[in-house]
Image 1: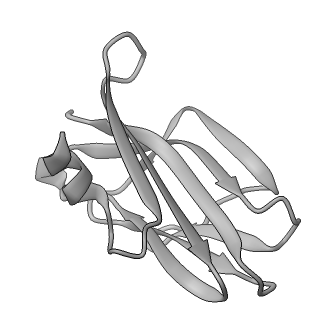
Image 2: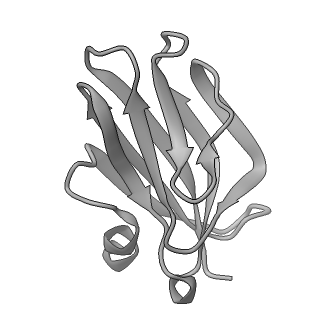
Length: 122
């Protein structure tokens, strides 16, 4: 399980991460979470593993409660459609192998960005 966490975390800038096995769900694999607090600018949050390591399926993203304060984006796809608070992707949003999710603070002051999903082995 620690190997999966190591594969998926982008850099030491991630504030926290956690993992747990999923067995009874439409998705199977390891539940992953990552968080980052950014004072200003952009910070990497999570990097999906290479194609040999499975797929990261984004299931929920939570950003600052201040509208237009934080943007969650995929380096490969660009800005993800999010509103202030939490957005749930059901059944999930597949993140391309090796893609990085990052958060951009648009207003200054410490803002938080949190994502959760499933590292699928398929």
